[in-house]
Image (cartoon, rainbow, N blue to C red; front, side, top):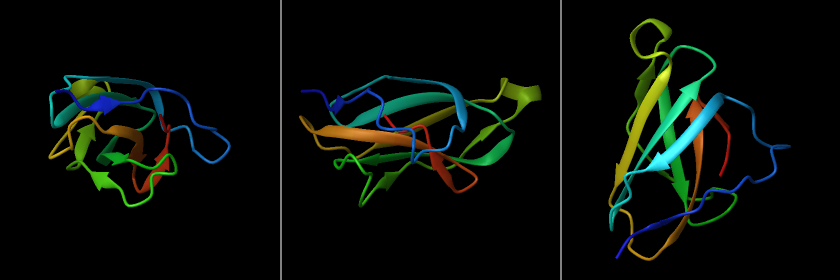
Length: 102
């Protein structure tokens, strides 16, 4: 059984654009991996996951780093402990600013 990770745009009226692309994959029965290319260098990038489309009561990944010189600002984010057969919505948080919801 795999976790379901949804990948559609939720209104960007409420979400800041903090990335140039997001790729989700590496899905197992209880985990997911996401790569996101950010617009700025940062050591405070997190994946935000929720079963609610407004990302209420979220789960977070550990902080990742995006740096133009070392990784072309592509942060690698992962989260385990997800519930199988569950629909998750996600967003990317950069420097405390949530944006780019899917």
